[in-house]
Image (cartoon, rainbow, N blue to C red; front, side, top):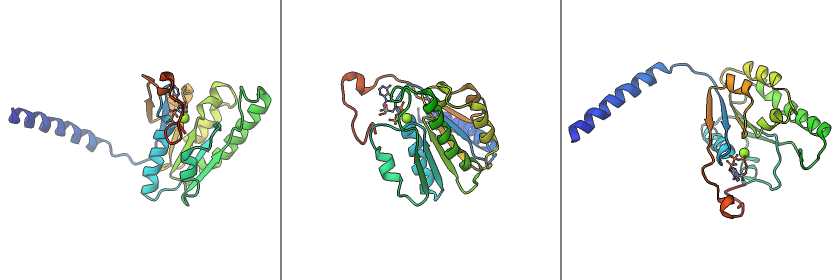
Length: 196
Ligand code: ATP
Ligand code: MG
């Protein structure tokens, strides 16, 4: 029994070691967090905490502003290694004005874009950016171009339920968070510290 287990684990280790030996490239990656389940933005901010732990410089651009001031904003905004921008004050059903929404989206992109040519930043989070493409507030092509031309070491995380295909084509890591169950549908009210 133990021998068999040991053999299986040794075989597994050999396979893993071979995979690790093959992954030698050192560069920043583009991560997409998509899907209808809960955990996209919180994963991005968890990764940012991880980066900050290693002394890396980070920037966040939030393309949609929620109703509440989020815990992550309160926690990270005063961190000396974090720039935090909340854009998109009132979109779609709030404004019901497409021209204004496009102008807001454009402003958010103008805030985000310079970071993609600034090598001082190690991690960028474009939170809820995917909606800009879904509602045609932004063209995806200039975003793809800027992402492709960014500093080699720079990591970028984009979140949002649905992702534009051109972004998926250039992404290195794509995680789809599945909505299996959500407390909201059980009648539980959104709570500070969990939902926002
Ligand atoms: P989180 O910020 O918790 O990681 P998210 O980024 O994956 O969530 P969004 O689509 O940005 O999800 O929605 C943000 C808010 O909506 C959060 O308060 C989140 O808990 C809630 N939410 C996410 N998924 C669902 C769902 N399937 N049903 C109801 N509420 C959801
Ligand atoms: Mg989110």
